[in-house]
Amino acid sequence: MKLSYETEQEIISLRRKLHQIPELGFKEHATSKLIVEYLQSNGIEVTSGVAGTGVVGLIRGGSDGKTLLLRADIDALPIEEAVRSEFKSKNPGVMHACGHDIHAAILLGTAKILSEIRGSFAGNIKLVFQPAEESDGGAEPMIAGGVMENPAIDGAVAYHVAPLPVGQIEVQPGAVTAAPDYFIIHIRGKGGHGSAPEDCVNPVIIAALVTKRLSEIKTETPSVVSVCSIVGGTCENVIPDSALIKGTVRSVDEETRQYLYNTVKNITEEESEKAGGKADIQYNFRYPAVINDEDFAKAFAASAAKVIGQENVVRVEKRSMVGDDFSYFSQLVPSCYARLGIGIGNMLHSSNFNPDERGIAIGIRVLCKFVLDYLNTTNAIGK
Ligand SMILES: [Zn+2]
Ligand SMILES: [Zn+2]
Image (tube, rainbow, N blue to C red; front, side, top):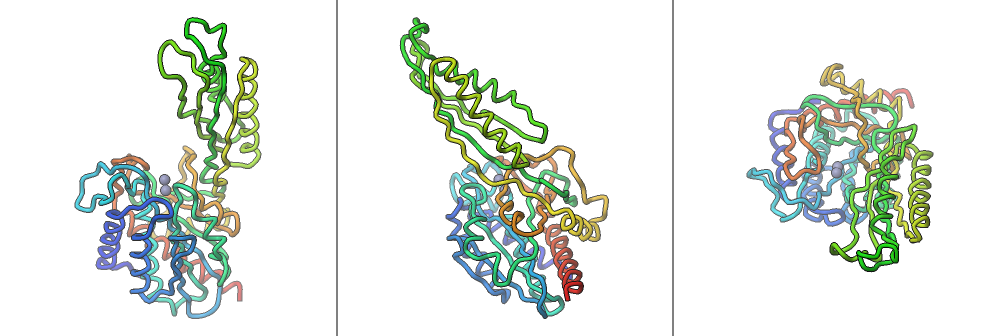
């Protein structure tokens, strides 16, 4: 397995093409088309239109064996790009600010290299280009669309770019993302003249009390409760009838997740009722946390170390509380979600996000190495 200078340049230019045509969740039509064309031009079996804009490629090895699923998400964000470059987003208000163009490019490069040597390994590689990670979630509909079958998947891998130094990859066992649940709370009071609060039930005060208590919630395992929006009232002398609070609740295990749901609900109801108001709580459970399988993550880290050196396979103290619907794959098969360095200080979801493209080649080389190590080892044992 070798990544030539020419292939690296080809993949970087593909990434730039993808970067120029960012599309929001389930609207990744041009992105999907580009992916399909590239896979087909490399002689890879392709199924398009899975979960709408998802694409699945299949590389069959020289003989039967286990099947590894490699996933890249392909959607962009509703952000106006601030980075000036010759491959700046051509779609106003939409930007690849989470690096999914990098993920897709890495998977395309990996696909090209592994398809060229397909006779040399046993088993199969399924390439999953998944829509809508940022919005409604494309993983579940792709699974419903049969992506885990024919051939059945034995393990899954995904990258996410991260503000780590280029050349480093973060791999750890256990929970590596959080469940990104959220709430919208509608507090109803009784409006009236700002000069006579005694005749009113002020929903702004209730919202403030609820917000304060929500931000004080503590749990034994890592969690976050952030109130990110309070809207209520229109002017300085009218007490409004209602107020709205929105926030995110993140946890890494199901028990804490349920505890947080109950606590948010109880605090809100308690404060509202105490003040004589009422609350409607819309609580949305989104993706569960991604849980890396211990042995599988260890095997990935070992392969990565062979390529980039043990010292560059890192564990980061500060836990990331972002969400990713790769969790639906990780619930079904042993899996590893690894973070790939694209430069310190490169904040995801920022209009200035500008990943270092040298991370692409590193991502490809490590992924190819792991796939070959995995298929050769497991298939040799499995026979
Ligand atoms: Zn994102
Ligand atoms: Zn992302």
